[in-house]
Image (cartoon, rainbow, N blue to C red):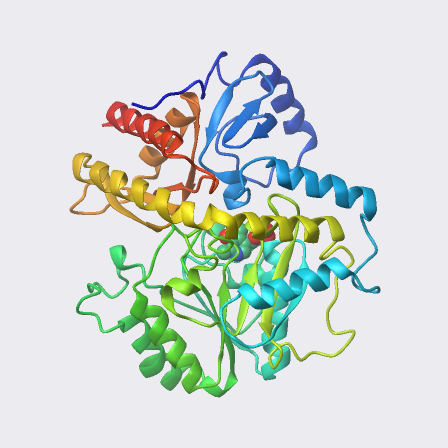
Length: 443
Ligand SMILES: Cc1ncc(COP(=O)(O)O)c(C=O)c1O
């Protein structure tokens, strides 16, 4: 049995202090983001988040797949403070910065592929995607870009043009960038073509070759295919290995760039440094953000020196790659390499097994999937019909919150499990037992 002194819920939720902040938030903060539950955070350490009423929660969100090294890891705090005492900012857009160069050299070594890679530093996932979009057009001199349904690549106009995850994200923002074509992803649990992976012969890729490229889209005008190696916000959808293999081959056949968006799946989350490694893919461009700097804003767009061939003045950022974020990224990568990636693989396999057991026991779990600590359970009304059950899913997440477990949704009907990679088996057991209690109460 799990030993635990957290989570600990001492007040009604939201507590009295939280209520005061929630009222002010309504007045002063843009209402454009979706918040899952009324958690007003005071502090966090390791796996535990404390709210402004001193309730403690076990964090299975990592601040949306960001705090892979856990909250406020001692070595991260130390590197922030030592770098802040040395240099906080001198824009990389106009001056040279040793830490950017050091980090870019490290990224060249750890990103898939043996050749030298160059990095452009930004501040967010969307910026990394914008950069990749511009670079793909610049390098190929082609205009069309292919992306996938259920993809989430960010919310700035370029990134949003690639995103096709939820209507609210696009509504009233049209028109977006023209010449972005969306096609179905290999979401095998709900195959667009009604096939099964053992017999489909990768119909979703064959269709591009045999239909799209013969009727509507001249392949010679396609700059890039943007693909999340594992779809994140779209439901933690893991495609079969053959999907990426076939897609990659297609890009080789037509000189199209293969752009892997690893903003969510990268930095150790899947039990490898990058999810691409599970699929033996060497992307032409790779986008990285979220987990790269343990909570500080930083993103990286990494490409081979042949692809990243733009000239001075074509792209830049004032804040991108600031020295504190770069120093923290180097410390983060060291922690990941020194054991956290292996731990993600180990604890992820354990949780996956347990979720599979729950899938067999509870009729509302239609599918369990994931790699490492990027795991999800899809909630359905009925296993046979696979009817989406977003209200049931949301009520499970609310129940978990009221018991001190922080979870998030993904896709139309799934719950994601993306705890910090410092997760212990004890903490995994605490979370699993709370999750099972919620399932029991729901069923
Ligand atoms: C795969 C992927 N790409 C891009 C983004 C956008 O990142 P940001 O919110 O930092 O702009 C996200 C965010 O969830 C993501 O999951």
